[in-house]
Image (cartoon, rainbow, N blue to C red):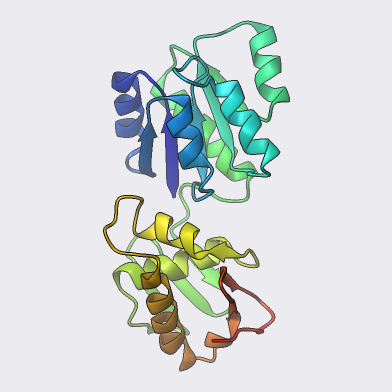
Amino acid sequence: MKLLIIEDDQFLSETIRETTEGLFETEQAFNGEDGLFLAEQNIFDIIILDIMMPYMDGYEVLKNLRVKNITTPVLILSAKDGIDDKIHGFKVGADDYLVKPFHREELLLRLEAIIRRAGGTLEENTLSFKQLKLNVKNKTASFEDELLPLNGKLFELLEYFIHNKNTILTKEQIFDRIWGFESDTSTTVVEVYASKLRKTLKKYGYDQYIKTFRGLGYMLTENGEGND
């Protein structure tokens, strides 16, 4: 799963990253503007958000996200411990609010609870789509106990599709999620890998479930309306 930490204290941000590294792939931003830019890509599973930051505070970041209908779960992490601060945080769209200083164990429990409410789990090692099974710990995919030749980015692409089935994923979202913001390749690589994935799944009749939206992106659909 993918975590975004928006926290201007670089030492604390690094501590959080180290605390969660066994559970999440992490991106970090150290001010509100950079954090908003990353969060707007809508590729993260959860966001940890500070309030008092340069350029834009956490409340403004969160308000901007919710106005744009970005529903990524957000845990506010702040030294502001007043009841009014907490109420304001929840009113602008926070899913939870944790006061600094905090225990690492509590942070992990809060994150797990948020993920669970969003319909996922931090401890689940398998994903499934119909008869396709993915072991996300071992990075293997199978169909009725037959292993599929899916490695590296192909596996990650199918995993991302399954996590977001029945949701349109733009080429930009897929690229940023799998190849990363700083990759020196281009979004055309998404089309190449989507085509490779279809060819791999065609043997099992599952290529039909990947629907193309011309000029926009792809969606894993359960009704078999795919096209290429």
